[in-house]
Length: 359
Ligand code: NAD
Image 1 (cartoon, rainbow, N blue to C red):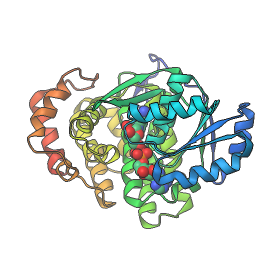
Image 2: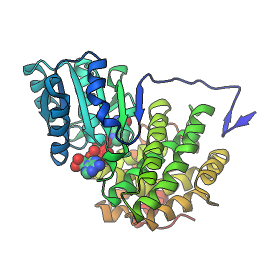
Image 3: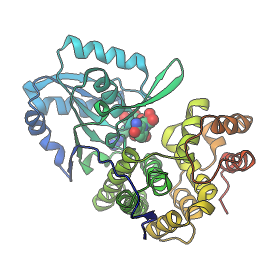
């Protein structure tokens, strides 16, 4: 029997452990969560932009706080992790609190990989990193990804109020980044009915939430819908393997230093168009979730109508990068439902480079 795009009688499902606290105002439970884990000296992590939120949390945690480290950076550079490690050792830190997007969560995960310290993460974007045992670290310009149970955060507090300040443009691209996790979870080799349910629900929650956020960034119901969707999409990313779309974004991001969520947004409609002929049930699920006829065009129209940049050239990719990225995408490829064909991949990247609407 086929259910949500999967054969119900043949699949493997791996669940990741973790505690999730969801809802407006839930960050006020942070001191109790620190206590529940028996922590005495937690370090609060943030990016420089979100330092004041980290300082405020540190004050709320009170005597159990060992202070703030507010130097998290995109793509988790190893030099930053080493600086933070020195603070962890010097202050005898026994737990980590991260408040921020994927960059801050990445730093907490990098520290946890080295120390196995427990992590409490309060996400402020829709990237979904908090739900995955995956870490991508950058050293000497190379991003290396690894997976370990030590990397998965123990507690995640989804407080919708933290997302009100996320600018509309970033909300849209971060939301599309989340949608990408769910779309690929629907057609990955490890697809299974439970994850497909989460994926379809996650896409729907974001597709409904994002237009309302663009109209009013303080719309609490829309923010809750998007954050809930981001959680579900993050579970998808953390549970099953990804495919061509994630491989392309990883390649393009590393090769041309393109911004993470924006690159996902521009590439997703074209990766979906590429895989569309090979994945009819997954495509129906995406279309159903979004209330559109065609998933590739629907994703493009959603992002574009909300002001996202749809051309990779406008994100900084050079034109001669198309051939280079095509070769890189074909080297060590991820499993993909449609075999990788060089000319078709080049055409996909050309369309994404130009920001054309997929047909
Ligand atoms: P980000 O964490 O880099 O945030 C971008 C900027 O926005 C930062 O300056 C941040 O401080 C600021 N910001 C975040 N939330 C805000 C808010 N609510 N209000 C105001 N400013 C806010 O962006 P991101 O897209 O969340 O994360 C990207 C990084 O996460 C990349 O390095 C990517 O590789 C990684 N990532 C990893 C995984 C994984 O599973 N390992 C999954 C997704 C993303």
